[in-house]
Length: 125
Length: 187
View 1: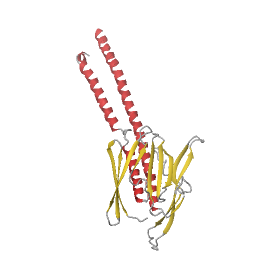
View 2: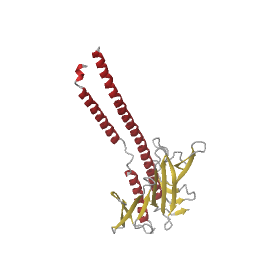
View 3: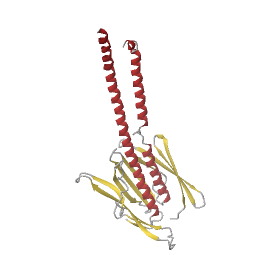
View 4: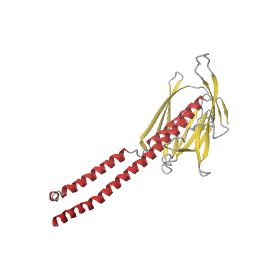
């Protein structure tokens, strides 16, 4: 033990290092674990089907909602409403085909934007 | 004698410092590990929920676009009728033009002596449910509505709300589908 007598500082240092290594390992594990606060996929799913709704409205002769609409979704919880803004754009190509471009954005969130495109032949109702 | 006493005291002191630290470290690691398992379980259940919602809706959109007629006499069981052309058989070379039905039916199963009703979607005449049959995330259908548009009967509004039984999260999707080939509509 005489040898260890002047090594006390190093042993304490060892404890410090061990703690740091463990903390680092825990951080890495936590980061690798799937995060619960990742609503991106839910928002995307909602937006895709709102775009589908807009496509269906554009294709039909229904006029309500033909110039875009807004829809409030509570898919992120009751106290967290998300307002989707759906805007269509129609391009006529003249050869009997029509291209619909639908852009879905979230009000107050600049990072989210979904653009969907569909080309459909003109149907006479 | 005094030398043994000294070294013994040192070992005890070392132990007294190391033990609480070790306990703290292991407690922290165990908490992190449990949290990771918990998050993984919930995340997996949410993925299953999203996947099932998307699966039901994409099947319905597919059937609705191909539909020749739609029967909505039972509001919770839209009945699409469509024609399918089977590939020609090698023996006769016949093209079979047959009429097919597809009914999306919501059915409930009592879980425990009338305590809880669990709603699942399935095709009528087919024993396998479309939703709620995934081992990693039990789901139930909370709301399922099909409603034709007032202005255009060929436009079908669909509302589907599902909940995961593991995470408790709900997803409500509002969408619509246009049925270009739908000639008859039975409300």
